[in-house]
Length: 404
Ligand code: ADP
Ligand code: ASP
Ligand code: MG
Image (cartoon, rainbow, N blue to C red; front, side, top):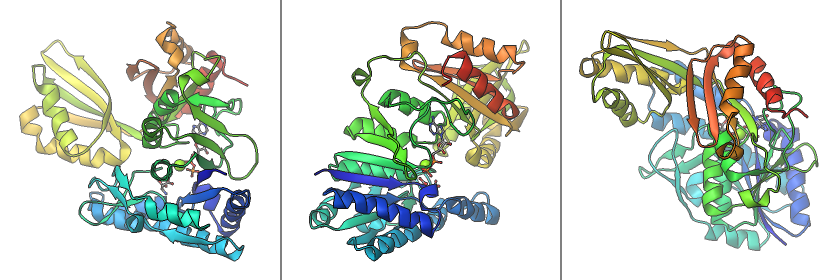
C-alpha cells in the first residue's frame, strides 16, 4: 500500500467525460489499496478566459481581485471530480485552498506556498476518503485567496505530496511523459524514462510547460518522487530522479522554447556606475522578474540596455520605467513581443565544451539572427524572432542528435 497524490491537468478534466475518466483512474488506485489525494486544474481554456476578462476590464488590475476571479476554475473541477467519484462509489470530498489551509505569501498572482496543514487530510485518507484539492490556489496573510502563477497546480500537487508524506506525486497530463523537447512541435522528440531534478528544473524555468518550475524546485528540496504520465493511456511515464540514478548521461537532455517573454530596450542611457541598478531595482520592487539582459555600449558614452520580462508584466514594466525616467535619463523605450527564447539544457555541459557553439552554428546556417544570449552552468539560451521558433527547435533537436 502506498500513499499517492494524483494531479490532473486542464486537458484531463476538460469536460464531464474526461472527469469521469479521471474518477475511474482514481478508483483503480483506491481499489489497489492505496491512499489517494487528488489535485485538479481548471478545465482546459477556463483560466485563459478568466485571465482575459481581468485584462479586458483593466490591464493594470488589482492582483487580489485577479486571484478571486482566476481561482474559480479549480473550484468547479474539484467539486465535479468529487461528485464523479461519489457517483462510482468512491468516498470523496472537495477542498479549496483556504479550507486546508494552503498558506501562501502575499504575492497575489504568483504566490508561493509557505505551509500546508496536512493532518486532517491524512486522517481522512486513512479512513478511506479521497480528498479532491483545488490546485493553483491558497490563502495569503491578508486572508484572501491567492494563486500560484500559471501552471501552479503542479506546485499544489508537489507541496501537498510533501505535506502528506506521500510516496509519490503522479502528474497526469496530455502527453505520456517528459520528452527531449515539446512533442507537439517536434514529431521526433524522444520520451525520457528518467530525467534529473536539475535538468527538469532548468527545462521548466526556460519554458517546458510540462511541469511548473516551482514544483520541481519544491520536489528537489522536499525529496518528493515525481512521475509525469498520461491520463489517456497506460504507457509508462517519466520519473524525475537524482543524478546518480541515471547511468548514461547525455550531454544535452532537452530543448525548450518560450514565447512568454517580451524584449524591452532602454535606449541611450548614460554609461556610468549605478545605471543598471536604476533600471532593475524599480522593476524588482514592482515584483517583475527580469530574465535575459544584454548591454550595448555606444561610442558616445551612452548605452542601450536590453532585457526580457514576461509578456504579462510588460505593461507594468513600461509604466514602472516611465515613473523613473528622470532618474535613469534614457532617450526612449522600445518593446518587441514577437520574440522567442530557445534553450538547450543538460548536466553534461559541465564537462563538455562546444554545446553553445553547435547552437550558434545551427541557427546561423538557417539564417536565424540571435538577439540576446544567456548561459548558466547547464544551459544556453538565445532570443530569436518568434516566427523561427519551430524551425529552430527542430534544427537544434537534430543537431544534438536527439531525434528518435
Ligand atoms: P496540464 O494542463 O496537464 O498541466 P500542460 O499544458 O501544462 O498540461 O503541460 C503539458 C504540455 O507540455 C504538453 O502538452 C506539451 O505540449 C508541453 N511540453 C513542453 N515541453 C515538453 C517536454 N519536454 N516534454 C513533454 N511535454 C512538453
Ligand atoms: N489552471 C491554472 C492555469 O491554467 C493552473 C494549472 O493548470 O496548473 O495556469
Ligand atoms: Mg500544466
